[in-house]
Image (cartoon, rainbow, N blue to C red):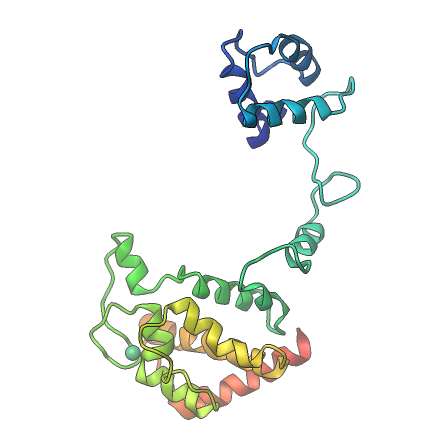
Length: 240
Ligand SMILES: [Zn+2]
């Protein structure tokens, strides 16, 4: 099993690049070490030398190889340990780390991450994947291919929603990227959970409104959408 993992496979590649008898995948780790490490007399590159050092530091037992999850003491995978690892402070350098702390449902956090990474399936993204779809912004009837930048920041309809809630998104530099604008909306509010939740719910609702108009031919006036955002974010603050 070890030899089929990413780490083991790269190790196998390293051994077999040394002009020695090739290593079989069904060999045990202990046998591999005995058979091959002792015949490594050729000059090694620095990277090969480091890999060899790693191999020699392995503690081997007579037990069969098995996969271990390193984030639990018992070695078995749990979703709780994976979540704890992902959200533990200082373990990641992503600029979107703060999203996981906002008081909104997990599905909304995932939506925000997809949006921030430019992975939301807007018409622009569908066209990039050669999928046929109707073109044009259903919120303002603009004849664009619905890039996320337009949908959430430059669209007059979305701008009206942001304004009705006291946010300014249209004043940002036009050359700013989607990620820059996304982070700029959140940055002044990072210490305020109420505003963070409101901003998140606004993004979510613009997408929800877009989907309602695209797939159900249902449209709501801005006043109703504004009230819906306020109510939903209030509920999220209490329940999440
Ligand atoms: Zn629009």
